[in-house]
Image (cartoon, rainbow, N blue to C red):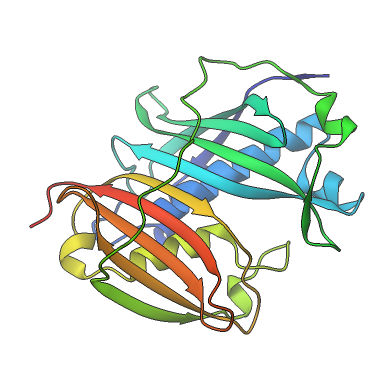
Length: 248
């Protein structure tokens, strides 16, 4: 079977906007993941297909770039396609358009396959490898390389992991991690426009954990570095880098 791009349509709902009336980054990432789910379902390699074999998809990294945020009630189209493979890493790209074909944003992501019992990464099984990658567009540059380490912490916050933070994989959903790195910031930063986010998921967090979120300056005044760790184990869960409009 060949892997062709998929398109999914969404309408920005009132529960998914900020007080400017624009879709939030966690909401947009949720749209992208829903589009990926629909595309993999059509290919017979959705999360449900994997779970039947004791496996699941796990997001390792995602880099999002936004040019304009859609408003409440605006109809958008998310196009997604498998963009390549590297050993055990599977790449998937996204583009977000308006109904008039205006490009609002784009993202590239890296995925792994995990054994749901052992909670360990496994080699990509043959039934996934048998799906031929046929990119619909020129692939975006893969999200590679290390992010700068957070050195000087400016803001910190604790987040207890509760029932509604957990997803089908029985760990904190990746959009909740993304929300937490942003929730740690003060209002004067959040009122700026978030242009880019590069987020690496390093470890799981489960019900009952407490997550410590820390933020500090990056290499320029428009860049912030983020880190989430487990209070119980000290393990680093997430590392991220965000790029904003000029910060004051």
